[in-house]
Length: 163
Image 1: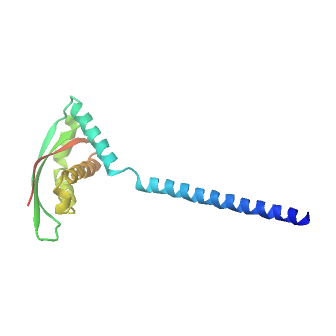
Image 2 (image 1 turned 90 degrees about the vertical axis):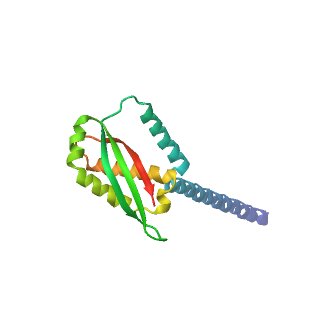
């Protein structure tokens, strides 16, 4: 009898250890999954869909703000195989007429911001559609940081040549 009572707690102890190990493994796996989800964020496909939806919404809105043309830029871009250039002309769609005056006053700052940002890009980043859309988003955000009286609603590339 004594042997049977001694074996029962050992068997129960093994089950408790097994359950504890499984519970710890599950916590680690769940924690890793949550961490991966938070670190990875949204996939590029989801971001592209969201951006396309925003653009479609902007195009669907009948209100077109005032437009300001910016003279063409010729900017050196980074490339390992040699010297490359980007020639681009921009048109800014603004939220209202009051912003037009501010854009004209800040034109040197705007041109500088555009030149500095484009100069950090590589040929491969600018040659496909996704790269151009990314550049458009970055330029819009950078230029909106300069503005105080209003915002740039949309940025249009009216000329875009990479050589």
